[in-house]
Image (cartoon, rainbow, N blue to C red; front, side, top):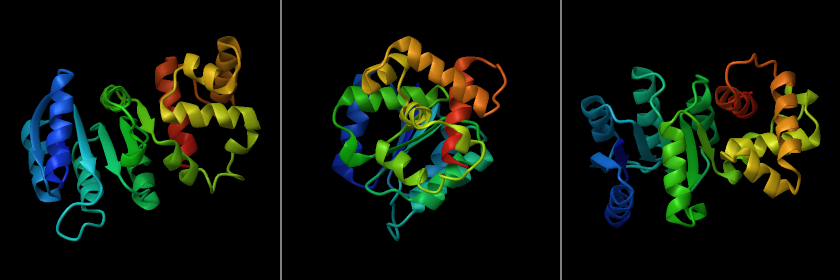
Length: 214
């Protein structure tokens, strides 16, 4: 799996490269600014781009803006964002096309290599990997959205965990319910969000995007 990485801090960039390579990823390019990120994506056509939000020269949102431009030029490009902060406006824009292949992790919340690698793989496969803090901030304006208003409190909890990328088993464990109950909640979510049968993995992504981008 080919990866393009954008991270301005040398030690962190080298650490991520070594971690990815240890798990069999090919790091096609590793850059420290948004301009080089765009060029690297165009040149190498990676399976996934891992992008720090704040890059030179202003260290505000250059990385995320470069990722957005790259995704507009190459629709569906899987992008995993790494940040110290939640940039709500740009995060919503990143989710706006509804195609999946999106992750947003807060650096301080990545606690081990398996968590990070799992997120990279999930995003590259077209899924979502959202930090719980990102989910919490993006959901704050959804209390009256339709058809989200039709979801029960438990179904919203299940959908939040789906946004984090949890499997049915993980959802059941986190909520202390059976896997059958988790599957039933997910089925109800699909029905209430009016998602037609198209494979559960695809509907999971569509449900998450409907929730986070409403």
